[in-house]
Image (cartoon, rainbow, N blue to C red; front, side, top):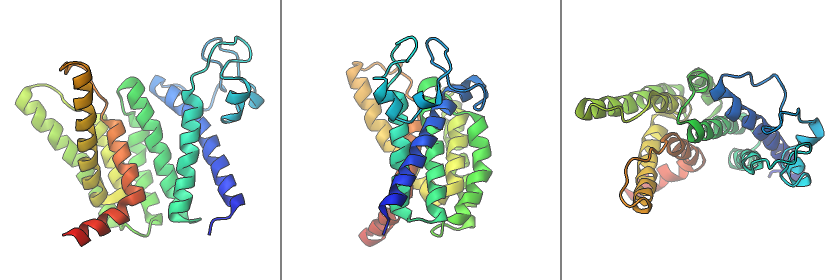
Length: 256
């Protein structure tokens, strides 16, 4: 049973971390420090006071505008804060007040960061994915439903499978069809969710990516020139598996 104070504290923690993720999403692709300088208005550059930097609350009070220049601030900032807070509560209620819940939440936070960076810049930064491989391998030791052997195989299966797909596509077409960032992202994810999670993630991301890609082609009237980042589909598959993985495996074993 999760107490209300614990749930509120978890939500607050998630909202605050979401505010930090906004900084990472903006600065990491630009190779800027995520520590200094402090947050500033993206339009006028005026440093943001602490009382104007409260997750969601400050955005609502200021009606989505900078206090100084009155320029509009993107609603994506509070949206990412709310999303991160929601995942914090999801981890708490799914895994209970355990170290496993914290490990899963940090995994969700990394996926959120990489998803929005990929949407904005079409890249998966090595600064996050490569250190994430050993980090999430160690954090997986806090998860009782997966063994270190499974996560070690997950790294190999995650990175190796996408590398093989990219290599085969390039050999056949002479063109690069998948960035190395996606390979490293799935290797990082495999270090936490194991090889079974990698297989599910590949299936889920391929299915959802194909559906959305076909929908976009239909809207674009058959135009296939629009590049769609694959990272968000991989991240969605990994997050879905961590939450519903046990139920999915149980259903599959029962079904067969």
